[in-house]
Image (cartoon, rainbow, N blue to C red):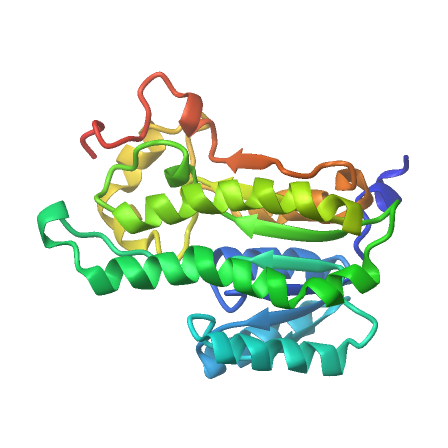
Length: 270
């Protein structure tokens, strides 16, 4: 029951997709600072390598870069083979964070945009989890299950302010996929949960926050944008002994936006 053991992830092996920047970087930093070995995956080889070098210098854990385009099924296969080579005894934590967004008016929304977002945000999360299944099984135990943490969004729960049709649909689908996976993998000693972030400083949110920062803050009951510690904290909780009995949950980390009297929604004029 001591805090140092209750939230301990030291020595764990984690994989964080989209770990080169934004929310993925926040999560990876939380794990590295608390003694985990973290593999970050990003499409950009340079960004991934730079992030891994910076995180390793922070310690006490380490960070290793494995660049891959997770839109591509064959590159995921190659990525998992590399993980199997490096970690033959398995991995403890898989964080499915890579994602894409596309906003356009309904009448102009491109088919290729919808397909790209659904593929990366939903189908390839399934693919990544499916291909990492044996690695996760090797580490999962009855008392300390392996963990899958999917990064969803509050836009998969409420109506977002922008016309991001594929993004919202993909995140809602991801939340349900999380529940279905949790129901099927629990007896394999693997828990599956989702985090649904609100506004955080990231490349995906950059344009929105540049234009509407004050409006977003005013629609957030806690009165601020999410900080790296907020995202790192929820993932450390879910990955540690403290979160070992949680599975199938979708946890909003949004400063209270979803329960606000004047929600940050499509009807809110930002």
